Amino acid sequence: MQYKTDSRGSLTYNNKVTNMNVFPSETLTRIELMAAESAVVIFSVSTCCMCHAIKRLFCGMGVSPAVHELDLHPYGVEIHRNLLRLLGCSGGGATSPGALPVVFIGGKMVGAMERVMASHINGSLVPLLKDAGALWL
Image: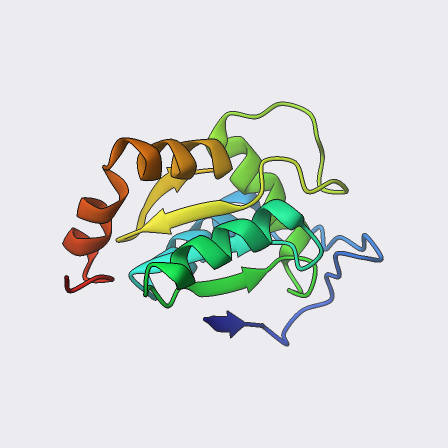
């Protein structure tokens, strides 16, 4: 797994400091760029057991995802809020890990834990990974 961190900015997840200069459109652009950097990208929280399970699933399949731990990322609060909006979640806020992990495959959002596990169980996850170049089997 490739863990990504960004040392710029003044946002911290644990201290819940927000930077009001970060507009949602800038954050959405940041998410798009981060999601396109690898065949599989996981937005996660380092202390979340569901996030850990998804990371282990992909590693067990031989996939090396890029992982963005939002509690360690300087823009993690804003990224989390916008991921919740993209998922269509209301509530939860940026202080709880609700709806995480969020997985992108081939630059496209697959969804949260339920969607990824459903895709794995019904057999549609492996073809997605092959099409994105994350699996060569």
